[in-house]
Image (cartoon, rainbow, N blue to C red; front, side, top):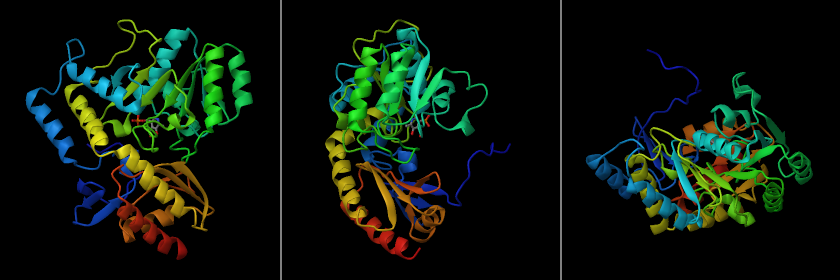
Length: 376
Ligand SMILES: Cc1ncc(COP(=O)(O)O)c(C=O)c1O
């Protein structure tokens, strides 16, 4: 059987990884400034992470969500403590798309409405409603194209005010920092207004923190720069450091009923062990602070690169937009300089390293990057 060929692949085969380093099948080492799409939070193969998961596997790996699993409560409690959302409730699932799908479903159930507002250049995943509110017609199949959605320009408060005034909107869905959209940061003022307008018009504000959450922005959640408390927050990616896990954080006034949401795999013992290990490491090694410090250093140094048209982002979520397409630049960094970066669209390089990135690693990147862009 062949693999269904949906991914363009680089000719590179990683076989092991440690911290911010990936080793390929030929023994060549790469500095990982991409974290496999912003997934690696606490670094590859962290000893505490390995120990937590292997110990758990020896006890019990899986049972259904019809029995008591105190690890889910432990995870919810630790997440509440570290994120500042101890009074919220947690629904556990398996991916970012699933987290958003459940958040949208929750909003629709609770408001009795079905219209969703999202923003230009958004990406929310590939399940039915999540992809319908993603601003990319190429990945929306006719089957998904049945949802009641409005896509507005990011940061346009007036457009949002008019759309919400209809009273027809169930939820406004916005990324803490747009990831696939090229690290576009919403104005704090826009998020504050969106929060207020949602409350006035009976809609829920959902913050998609799948990519920008879990410390990546230099705060636990990127929206915390705006000082707001949304009704619902979605997480995945860094939550499991590569183990598939997602979650929906839900404000205390939003009440569940049995059967409202559900999943077979969500919140299984192994996923909880991975999720707990991530939070324990983040706390012990002060990784949110590290993302703020090393990310701040990178952003400040990159500001002097004249070749970059625009620098966006916060912490270790950085987008570098160039006048010219960046495909060749990324290839050069990867194959000649052995540095993994990401791209989005044709003109933006994305830097999304593990949150354990050191200042030395960052300096190595800056020196290499400076040399490479000068010679392009
Ligand atoms: C902001 C955002 N939301 C949702 C998703 C979907 O997550 P997943 O691929 O885990 O379904 C992504 C993935 O890139 C994302 O960046």
